[in-house]
Every structure is written in structure tokens, then in C-alpha cells.
Length: 287
Picture 1 (cartoon, rainbow, N blue to C red):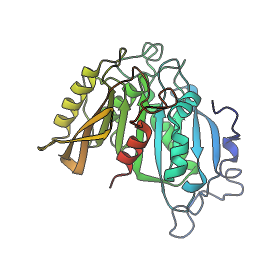
Picture 2: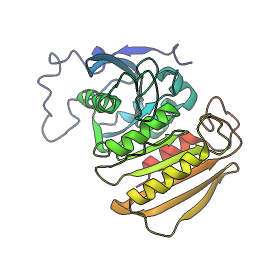
Picture 3: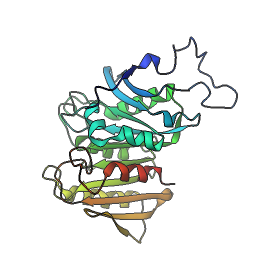
């Protein structure tokens, strides 16, 4: 668990707002001049959809270079937490290595309304797409974020939520990567966007066929042309990519064998050869 790490209050993320920071306007032509940021793990509360919501924001020192940085949003599985998401995926350590920022959201009663599941968020009609947008907007208030490098990933119910963002928020997210999730039947992206689907072949909770169906759906949505490229990035993974898609995007499916309903290569699969966190960041960071 990461709860033992220091958590910096949101009010201290940059400075006393509108007191030491002036009116928030950029100094000269530098868009990052008034957004230096503070490294650390920040527990942030915001209002979204009339509810108090929260997320964890991990800001490594390596991301505070004075230039716009990439942002990855992470969505936990049902009955889980943002703390557990970071602990299992180790995405905050990957952020430190890659020099980007990661935010892990907290679902309502530990669930996300992904359109196809899960309760109670779905039955309550929670607008989690709006919450994702609100998270990004709040982060951009305080940190210098590269608008062309905002990404989303998630596991299980969070993977299904990531699919929903791939269908409804491509104006905001450049690329997405759902892990062990499911896709809504209705999908109308606003623009072409890259997607890496990670699906476990032996998953007893979310059948592998859903990943195959999603791959077919998104190759059609992204107007991908032949050929397909097959790679074996690890002993237990085979990936099929359609690299020639509209808008210079890529659509990819990685089939991971030998584990059940888990984050491949994460804390619950420490000996797994395929490291989903590494593969996802490599996919996001590709030019």
C-alpha cells in the first residue's frame, strides 16, 4: 500500500492561490511560468456532478522541467481504490521514470459508470465522463499539462470506463489503454485516437472474446488499413497491431496468457513476463 507515503494537501500544490501566484496569467510567452508545481502525492477533492469527488495526483520531480508534461489518468477496478490502483500498477514509479504526471480517480462507492457496468455508479447515473474532464481541468489549473499528451488507462470496471472515454472523450484523450475491461456497444468517437487493448486470455471475469470484439470495433472506427503486425513482446503475450489507421493512429490488442483477472506484471502478478504498465506507457509515449 502507498498510504505511508506523504500526501500534500491540494491547497499547497502550487502556492496560496491568487495570493502569491498573481492572477494566474502566464509570464511573457512561457505557458508554464506560473505553474511550477510541487512534487509529491497529492490527495485532491473536487466537486463534480453535484458530488464531492477525489483523486490522487502523483507529481514526480522528473515531470517538473518547466515544459508541458504528459498526464495519465488511471481508473481502478470495482470495489477498489485509487491507492490500490497505484500500488498494483506502480504507475507512480513509472511516472517518475518517464517524467509524466499520473492521476488515479476514486469511483463513487468504489465503482465507475462505464455504460455497461458497474453498480452502484451505473444505477445512480453518475457522469464519470464529466468527472474525468473535471479532473483534467483541475490538474491543468495547477500544472503545465501538454494537451496533446493526455491519456487514460484502467483495470476491469476501470478498463470499461477507459473504453467509455475512448468512445466519448477523444477530444480530450490522445490515446487510451483499457486492461481487462469491456466495451459499450454504442461508440461514436469525436476524432480518431490510438488505443491499446490489453486482455487476459484466461480471464474468468471478463472473457477474452470481449477484447477481440473491441479490437474489431476500433479497427473499424479508426478506419485501419492492412497490414496487421504481430509481435511477441513477452513469453506470455502476443500483440496484434493495426498501425495504419486514420489520423496517424494505431489500434492494438495484446493477448496475455497464464494469469486470471489481474493487472499483467503488477503487484499481484510479480513474475509475469508481460508488464502492462511498461507496455502502456511505451504505447502512450510513442511519437
